[in-house]
Figure 1: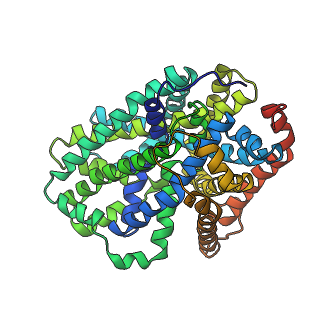
Figure 2: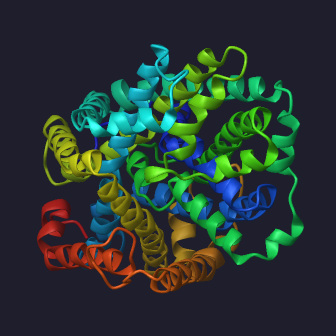
Figure 3: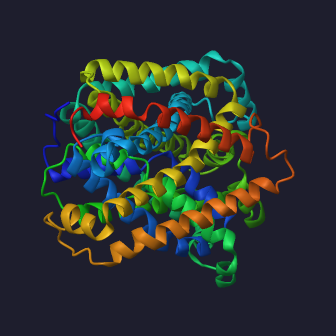
Length: 486
């Protein structure tokens, strides 16, 4: 289907792309991952991998989307041949599988914002409140429906009236909230201990390989590199938009949001609790990784001046971040079906209703939620690697010369791009995947069990099923999406 929509300006693209990258992972996941991996020492490899994984893949996605004018499925087929369409299918499916339960998380955020506005989170046991919310069954489904309904409506309105207009409101609002929250946290007595924990590295920790691997995983997860989301948005860009500077802005903006969130949360925890207990609370994952955000923070905010107001502000930031990423995920699925011939309104209805139905198991069963989070979160490593494979097959130097350098780039890209795509990213992928395979197979659990929550067997089983489906139907999908194009 011919693309007849586009962002109205570079600013419109950038705020939408920042919304894609900045999500709950910045506010919910990042502070906990920092705490679990050495505090300040974690930030060093995290910044290194921004340039050795995230930004190069963001440039690849931008160039592929702009050059092919197709979503993930058609982009791979058009760039390197129809018989490789299955690769784009896997990338698209991986992100949509995350969307199914990400909408559930967005629903949780809406629920807690509503509760914070009503003062229902103060003076209550956080664990008991969370358990009562989950025990109702209908409430998680209802708020999941609300999240998908609002996200679907925004995407239904189109690129300019829906996505761009919403992003221009959401992203500046999010950064203002994060700055206010961080500024307030830094004025609390004892906040300096939190800053030292966040920014003062123990250099010996850099010898711990786990910190490097967790930093690479966080960079891959948080920036959206390898998800296909920026590829989708780039379908609607102008032919001469700056690929290099845009990718740098998105990557650095995402990391800035993560640091602001950490500066709002970590000093608050240290200001309220003794140092030893503060470290334990920050590391507490809780059920489905909800411990810090949904159980502990309401308890902590009630102990600081104007805590009720800042608790509302925190959950408002979480809702804004969740929606800015959710609409990008819905648009990814919508673009795929539009490429296959559906008009936008039918594609959105199909994606939103399907995502709602397929998200219900995660809404009612936290074990299923955790399984899907593990399987497709790790699957993003495979997605990122497939982008590098596509560029290598096309020719890294040719890709740079024909698809990236002709843009009006303020910064030259250089041949370092070729080296990173051809060698660095494959090595990073092999090390990351190998480390995870080793961990999964030596965890003491029945690693081969395909129906367990956290096992090597469940990941390999689900990945293999989807890859086989896409490989078997590759030609049919390519014909429906690409038609006579090569």
